[in-house]
Image 1 (cartoon, one colour):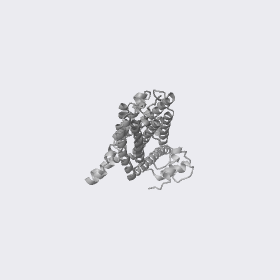
Image 2 (tube, one colour; image 1 turned 90 degrees about the vertical axis):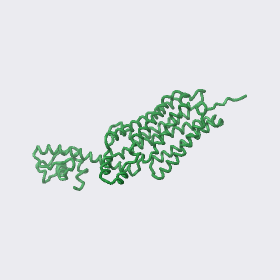
Image 3 (cartoon, one colour; image 1 turned 45 degrees about the vertical axis):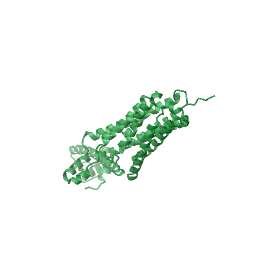
Image 4 (spheres, helix red, strand yellow; image 1 turned 135 degrees about the vertical axis):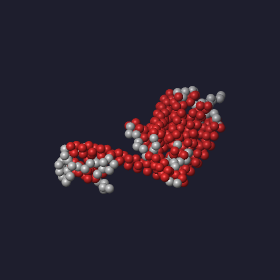
Length: 371
């Protein structure tokens, strides 16, 4: 009497050996490429992409074995392992895309959006926690799979739907983040670009060519936007088929809408000089901090000038601030007045009450030696 054996690979829509083997071989090439790029320029994004390629080599090799060997195809644990490893790979890819947009925002030397939603999207810790939750749900969905003849059981199906929704939401957030960056870059000329254009006009052609941004940096907005659209295509397909087991795993749809967008994104990441170096990122962060300090100082100057106007109306003789170069003696006078101390230029009003923002100016500018 023969015992019925379930071919879990066929139930999961895994038939093609050639396509899986082709993807595995292609990812081997990109693994070597990104490993060399990471060694030459030790940037976290290159290491992450090398790790992603390694995971895809493993996952597509497993898929090839599942399609080629009936002995492996009837092993449910092997099929579950393939699904889990494949989901973990997409986590790394989303992590990479989110980090690259953040790094390019720093390098662009533009003030970042202060909206609460954008600050939350830019928060690496929040994004990473949500990614791990999505993967944990996907792993739970895989480990709770039981055979019911026509696909996963109810609990596994619910967990899979929740995980897919999580990944879709994170993909949309990453797409919004990219759109904001693209809008910021295309709104007008970047200050650094203006400097480079001026330098190009005033120096010989050889220097101009060396100062010109690389292809990857000049077109980073379009490349990142295309990568985000590829991710959105992948997750839209997953969300559209998450309640249809057979449709989701149909190879005629799975390869072009789930496997291919990832591979094209990996190809785009390889554009030379798209990923900034650690030195560029550190310099960008420092410029951003300086811009924030300058904005705070300008706000303090504005506040101090309001106080100066009020004091002038009362008859005080206090030298006026300027927006571009605040006078050291003005800050000294007003800060001394705020502490109720006597000064040769502030005897008319020896106890001026200043707002806390103005009192903070002493640590921002007064303690700095006058230039």
